[in-house]
Length: 619
Image (tube, rainbow, N blue to C red; front, side, top):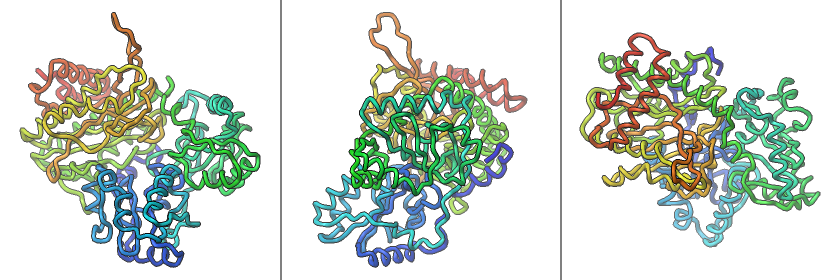
């Protein structure tokens, strides 16, 4: 969107983005099974991913949503002649039952009831299980090949996706214009990035690297696009050569003269269909080619191997430098959060005033109001994801998306969970606040305070260099664990710089992760608690990893977190007696910083509200 379109954005955000059509799921499933039989295979896998294996996919690639009705950002369906299942993680255990006909697709938790176990129950010896080699990574297929072979069945790569053959109103691929990302936001010229990464390839004896992640290409070339909702991605592929040159396989309709001038002579623009030819050429040369088995499609590996290339499996070389923001990007994200903090303060003041006056509020209306307020600052480019606006029991659905069917009124005595974010040209934001509508119960306040204790523990953490996010995850859960409580999602994800709101390779999670946190990385701090059919609690700020000066007698270099988000935490839900003196001091210091930064931008009743909302806990 453009800065002049906040109203349109607000209306758009108040609607579900997944479009599954009017054809019943049973008819779609029957059509797919008929197509599979025509192709001589008994089964097929339908992942949420597209050819780029990312979370952010265009409407033309929402195959899982079309087939099943499931609109989550991760998942997969497996279809056999008599059985079908959908696999989701803990974020979607409630949502899947609201969106999917579980009489057609058995809902299974991807960790507790994985695909391998389901196949062991349902896949018969001699059956052929098909997959689209563009929609699964090399790592995924290698694991699956062993599983299927052990069952006496066959895993078959299909030429052309059979679901596409029966999806008759499938949208066309996107063709949004690609624009230069100005140096005042990027901080480092594309040529400098390409030269540095090219030198790294030379050191490894590698001739080229296949780059398949759109955010990696956007970062490398200092460009931004609009091919998917909420993230400024140009969908494309690239070959980075050791000399710093790039072959960029992108639809020429997206590329204008200004972009060509921005890229320079070392970047050649090629039609997407020429990627196969380029990989074949590298194979003919017997070149060593780097490809990431965790992110690149199986098709890439098979094409290179068939052509005679020596495939070197390794991480996408853009991932780590992209995650470690430079000084310009960090300054930009701080500015974005100051701007965002003003919109959040105005929103939270409006929400409390409307609720206290007893005026009717619905989830969709509230989400729309927040989007409109963000749009008034003149810098908003898009939301960074569909706003999660969950009142009462809807707040317990971790990645709830309000729709006209699910929209409910905010009611006194309930909690309202609002997880939202914005895309500005200088930074990406993501913030969750849980607020009381009317008077909260004692249980709500206790559990909110336990979540807050975990949030504070992570925010205050100091840790030695080399520490991974998974080593810190228990800090955020400890207070909940002592009361027999927990939450079934990660504690923190990486965040891009006017790029993806979910970014790797770093994360804070129970799931083991060997990637060390490094200065410049931005991660979320978002512990929560969810009581099914009652309420949800989540407190989320974004933080940047920073150097922590050595104190007297300290022997190791330490890191810490700088909190970026600027929004008050609902004092009505905090039980100060459950906090230590250090935790109270953290809350008061955080609120003082919010007040000093945001209040000067406010006037009248909104400023008075913020002063009260950020008063010391003892006041």
